[in-house]
Amino acid sequence: MLHDLRLDFDTLEVVTLGAAFGVGLCLLLVLLALGRVRALGKQVRRLAAAPRGGSAGAGHDTSALRHVGLVRYDAFADMGGRMSFSVAIYDDGGNGLVLSSINGRSETRTYAKPLTDLRSEHPLSPEEEQAIETARR
Image 1 (cartoon, helix red, strand yellow):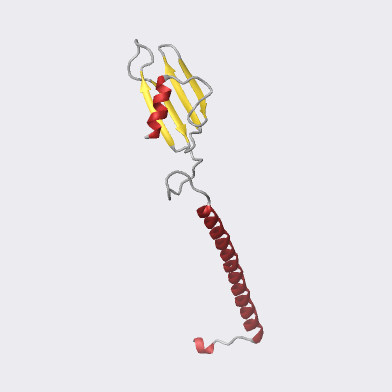
Image 2: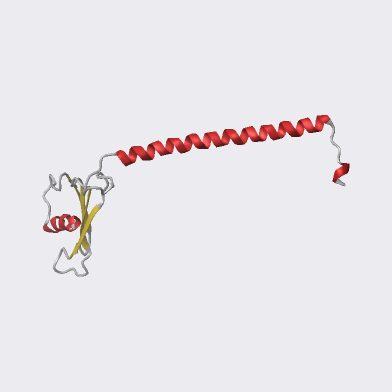
């Protein structure tokens, strides 16, 4: 049955041109993908060569907020359950913030204090200081 299959010249020409077009399109897509891989490789090398902080060879972003310390406590003598808290969040340079939530029977107050070099321009409570120290560990 296949040996009886005869294609005229015009049909063969259309099939050949279609196949050539398909091959050309595939080649173009491969070249575009290779260009993208090369660009990504450059970005990876640039990130790998970026200055690193912290301990030698740590390989992390020193500006990432990666130090976290949480302290829960009873802010008032008549309140139990340690529902008040202070949390310190800062980067390797000691820049970040301290959040405190003071919970009472009828209200809750929340405070945010910026940190620069582990110090704040606002007075820090003992619990906030403890949260900063906890984040150092």
